[in-house]
Length: 393
Image (tube, rainbow, N blue to C red; front, side, top):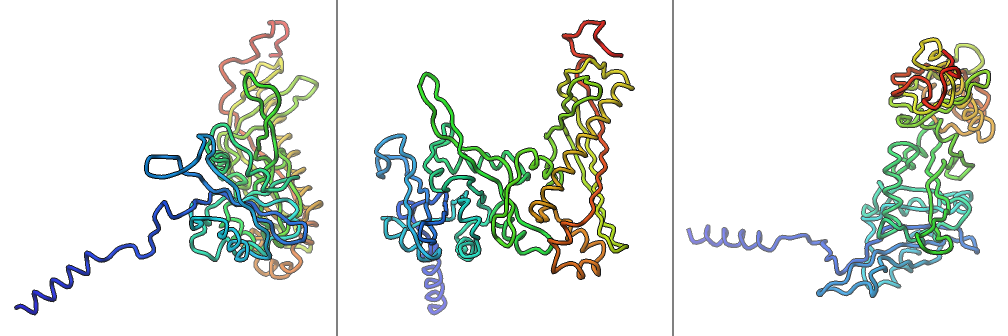
């Protein structure tokens, strides 16, 4: 009986001694919010990290000024491990990367290639694969980490919120980028960050800012080019995020312009490889409403509405053909996944073209059809500023 009691007491004692053996106190860590990587002058990698500064309180020390919410430290090295060790030597606290939400890549380094640095962001389990990755166009990535954003305490938080507003769009997390890079018949993409400016009320001059715009295209982990905003809007069809996007079309016979907002969309790709040539057919389908029109057409009339619908569909076809020409002829980069569709439809044909897919993709014939449904034409038929004699019925 006494032996059983002793065993029970030892067991209870062990329970009281258990805990998180690898736990770190908040006062012992430096929260890394963002990382920027650039190409150094000597060809090595220049890394800059944005570290959050805790707010001052009676128990802890923090920023000396209310506006000092973060600080930056930089180091140069051959690889991620060497850089991390050098960065840690500048810190009085252990660098903690689990809260990092953004990774910025300078354009020069992206064009040289990311194969020598990406492993450091994925192998360590404390790194977040859900961190967004963006290419900084025309500037060093580390420079944009210094820009203070008016709404957010830390610039990386602003970038994260801006990416989340874009939904699934061209947003790419580190995981998305790595999966696309390892996939057959698919080239990875990321969002693009550019410098911008803004003015403060009652103050002279402009202050630096940034904006997310366009798409960066990679092949073999090297940046091969960019899509502008208009081309990126066509890319949204395939990313299943065309909703809330718009189409602006010019009506025939100089009758003005009209704008259409898409509320739901679908895209279907069909491959045709029965003959020697390779063909793809893209069918776009969307529903939405007219949000603006400077035309004298009374769109409450069914015949006039058909004119508007036809103009919008023709514009959508034209926009898509320009996008396809860009990725086929200029970049020869299949960012949509036509190769993956061919692999599903005709595995034998895919095996025959797989090793030279970029060349076959560039030569493939593309056809586009569009079917738009106008659910709502607004509160009025013709524009209210028109006189009766100016309205076309």
